[in-house]
Image (cartoon, rainbow, N blue to C red; front, side, top):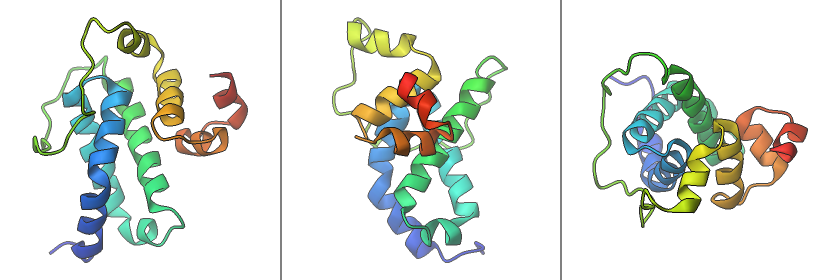
Length: 147
């Protein structure tokens, strides 16, 4: 039996998974890695679901969890790749039009450092302020402003 009632968690996931999946896809640039990041973020959130559900902004908490999972994933990337324990269904959409590999803007985005890419994606895709981005990245606001 799960440690917490699943109703509110499932509702939250159902409402916010498509948007967070798009965010993960833009952060990672790779759908398989994005799936792993999303699963890791939601598993971590489920472990502390009562505090997440009781927070002022559960979506911001989910975004922070996603960015933290992305950071851990980018650190592990140099190590041997593990098979994902769980794959997301194909019903979870990535960005509506997947950028073509020859798209110059997409290539420029992929060439950024993970933090620069995260700042750019959170600013343009999520429309967050420097303060909100700094909270999501757990980075000082002045670092975000420079990025």
